[in-house]
Every structure is written in structure tokens, then in C-alpha cells.
Image (tube, rainbow, N blue to C red; front, side):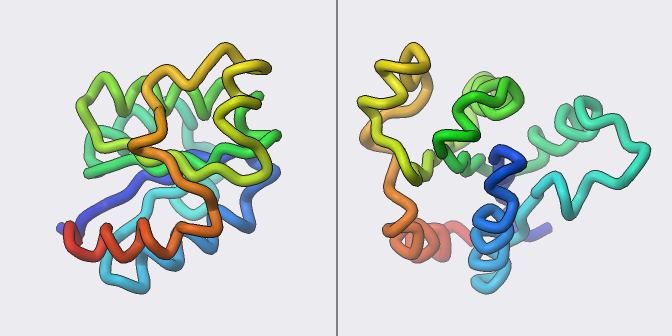
Amino acid sequence: MPYRVFISHGWTDKWVAAQMARSIKDIGGDAFIDFFDIKKGDRIETKIQVELPKCDELVVLLTPWSVRRNWVWTEVGAAWGLGKRIVGVLYGLSFQDIEREHGGMAALGPTNCLGLEDFDIYVSELRTRV
């Protein structure tokens, strides 16, 4: 089974998340992303509970929209509880914004976050795990 990355994002950021998934697939990895892998009629929470443990790591796209989504933080917390590698990708906000407006980063910090403009660095590092 290929190395699998769970991509957490807010619905508003669907296009960016899809580009992230394509980059992961281009290097031979697999990406779980809701709008590709959850079909109409599937129970979202059940699908996430089944799929997240199967993934090797979680990438979370943190934007002004996604940080307001309970599911994003639930997925981060679940990945943390499962001992998964977690990588945050910041776009349109900073650590300070999240600290000030949303109560902090919790399981995320400077060592496991990067800006979207550096996503290619993440993909390059991911290639060694794939």
C-alpha cells in the first residue's frame, strides 16, 4: 500500500487542497481528501474514523477559513492522538493570528508548519518517506 497522506482543509480551500493532493500523487504517494474519497451518502465522521488511522501522516491547510472549522481541529487532534506525523501549511495567516484569534496551535508549532509557498519543500521531504 502506498504511503498515504490525509489532507485536512476547510471547504472554501478545496482548490488549493486538490493541488496539494496532486503534488503528493505526482511523487507516488496517495492522498485521502474528502471530496475525492467520501461519496454522497457516506457518513463523514465514520469515513474519517476509518481512514485517518490508515494514513501515515496528516497535512492540514490552515487558512483564515479553515481555522474556523471544527472538523479541521478534530482531525488534527485525532492525528495527534494516533501519533501521526502532522504538518501544518499556513496560507493567509500567521502563527500569531491563530494564537490571538483561535486560542493557539496546540499540536502544531514552528517545527511542523510551513507556508504554502514552501509546500514544494514538504513534497521533496515527503518523497523520501514515500
